Image (cartoon, helix red, strand yellow):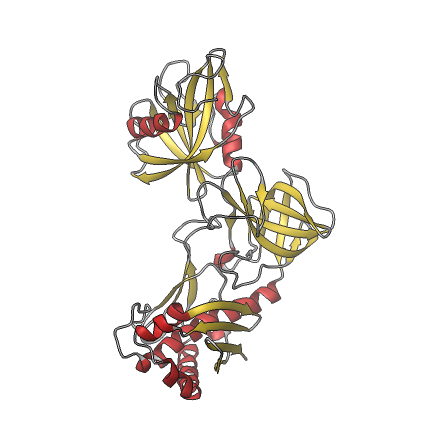
Length: 418
C-alpha cells in the first residue's frame, strides 16, 4: 500500500488520525460537527487529499484544527493491511505524532481536548470507529515510572508477557516503581523485588517498534527515548507470570534500593567534590563548568560509572584532548592523596548540612523523561542530569570518603558510604 496516495489499493478513501503523544498521555478531541458525530471523542485528523501523503495530511490537519505543529514518528497498525475499519468506503490510518510547537486549541471541528493516560480509555465517549484504534494507541505509550520520587511499591496493569530466556519471563506493566538498568549508561543496576507476589530477579529497559516486536538490551540499535519506539520497563520474573490485563502489586526490595540510592547520591557528591578539589590543576578555561561553577572534570573525563550498594566506582580518561584543554593530569595524580583529602573535607561539610536531595522529572512520568538530580549543597546548588534513585536528604548518607588510583589511561575513583 502506497502511503503517498489518498486511496487504498482497493479504492477506499484514506482518513488519517493522529495518536498524538505527550508526557505519557494521548490527545483526544471532541467533535462538534457533523451533527451525527457531535459530542463524540476521536483521535484528531481528517481526509488525505489527492497527491498528499498520510503524514503530510496529519500535520496539516493538526495545524488547521488544533493550531499545533507536529511531527509524525510512527504508526499504530490496524487489521486492514495496517489500517483500521471506518466505513464501507473509507479506512482510518493511525499515525503516532509528537508536538513540536503550540498547545492544542480546539476551534474548527472540536470544542474540547483532553490528554489521557493509559488507564483513561473509558474517561471519554469515543466515536465507535475510534475505540479500538485509541485502545491500541494507548498501549504504545511509554511506561510510567515512580522511582524518581523514591517510591518502592505501587500497582500496575500487565501489558505484555514474553519468555526472556534462562527460564525467566519478561513482564511489562503500564506503571511501575521499579528502576531498570539503562543500556545507554548502565550505572545503576535494575531493581529487584516482587510483581504479583512473584520474584523479580532483574529489571531492564525494552523498546517496542511499529512491528510489535519487543526489543531487549543488545537488540536496541537506537538511543533510549527515540520516539519511533515505545520504551518500557521489563520485569524479569522467576515463576508463574500474571496474564495481560491483570492488575498486580509491585514491590521493590526496599533495603537494596536504599543502599543503591545512597551509593548514587554519594557518587554525584564525590563527582562535584572532585571538580572543586581539582580546580587548581586547570591552566586554561575549562570547556565546561558544573552547576556550582567549577571545571567539570567528572563529565569531561568520565568513561565508566558503576553505582554499588553504599558506594560507587568511576573510571576517568586523562587523554590528549583533556591535557590540551589545560588539565595537568600528571600533577593531579602526583597529588591525588591531597586531592582526596580535600574532597573528603568537602563531603563532610556537605553531609553535615543535611541538604535535601530530589530528582526533577519536569512533570514527565515516563521512563525516558529528562530527569536531573538537585541538591542544595553549601556553596551552590548541585544539579546533574540523572535517571537513577537518590536519598531524600544528605543526612541519610553518614560518612562518605573517596580514593583515587592511577590507571594506564587516567585514574579511577572509589567512593564509599560508611
